[in-house]
Image (cartoon, rainbow over all chains, first blue to last red; front, side, top):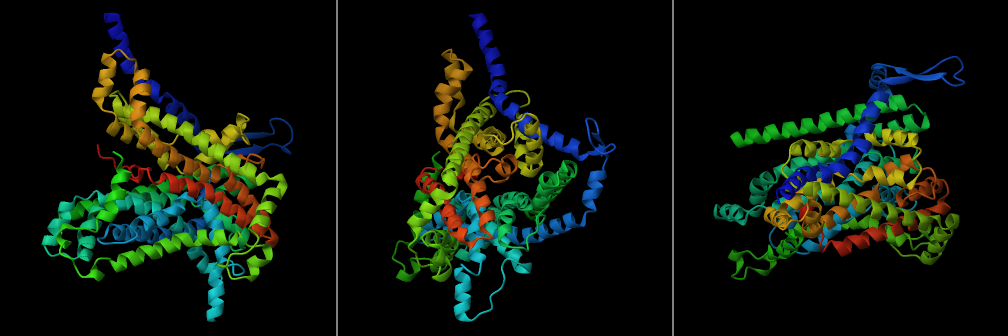
Length: 308
Length: 302
């Protein structure tokens, strides 16, 4: 009896570690090890002896921070970073603004067709970014696009959507289209969790629907907004699929348009995995600094408002 | 628990507030502005999909000559051309995507279920630290992972294989997070304790008692991961070079790359894009009935 009991309590103690073992192994192999390897690579370079022929002619040597200083002073990378900041400055506010508006409308009283519209707006979530970029890419092409057809019939100017300034709008539109629905659902879920009494109290105070939305609903879903913005910033700074897919359709997109495309170019086209690793680490650090910086700023602001 | 049902019922009922029982004027019954805004949003979201559906029915010449939103007459020909393209490699890509997404999501759900259950039900040293470390994975940009993953898999001679696309995606921090929340809400501690009293081992309690209770949450994890793998592009783009192993996203991309300079291939790309989204849209429409969207955003009430 006692032996069985000890065996059992031993089982209870070790069981959670056993259950977590697969996740632990996968984490070590596909998260920790690659990150460590990327950092190691970023601090090394290849030294070629003589003509670089034969065994041992190419060896990995310590490079210190040279790869990082190269990356920081690289003007093309800097321009890529600026392009992405401009792109992100459109995507994140527009996408979350639309998601918030749609969520509020879904939550409004006496609204019709809510289940249908909710599903329709959420639908792009199921469509791969590559296919979304393709569909919009064709809609941007004057030869096949219905927009250009209409502009032509109306005698209006026809801007080139795949070049210059409009290109940012065109790219941002793809991300907004793909991401609004998911964020809308997250915000809508938070709205539905607000207890009905809160609205009753506001109505008794004579608040209109609009006032309730602005003064009660939005402040109460602020945490969801912060969270969706946090993840949107991370995703936006990583943009790769959409510009890569649009590239065959326009000459205005270089192979290094976004910093992530630059990493791909360095690693797999130029074969310089060391500077690619340094750039990747740099992007990761900037992403985390920006997203957590945003989280801190947002949280301290909410605290201030609570204190007031 | 099945919170999606609650949302679906609550949405239309939200219009009938107790105070409006004494028949308000008819025009006030429908909130026009919000409905109009939502319809515009739906139109915006459905427009490219509608376009690709219609464009896929057009023959090559119709695509450039007829008005975009008029259906054409070439769908069966387009389908034939697409199936004939490089001996039907398109359907191979579709099958590959189904394989990557199906097997990947299944493995991912299993790992998430194990980990989520352990983190929710047991009290043990390092529980929160383990959870936090696993969650940090969700913040790791895929790029910093994908390049070294490729280089490491190359050392193990595993690149350009099915495994190279499957394995890196099995661990899903988000899936573990959802499974933990769901297990905490769905598996009562008393039930686990009762199982121990009956002398059942921990593994038996998990598989026979806890797992059935977690099924609705695990369906969400599976679907979420299925969509994530199906839509993935970066990883196969980096890992694969043999187009027999491509998933549909990468296959379509290579088709577009070739087609960009040959407008004759446009119809193939468009038809391919349309067929590529059909399975996901169908899946989406079937499952949205019981896919708990609340869980997707982490809101579970016990």
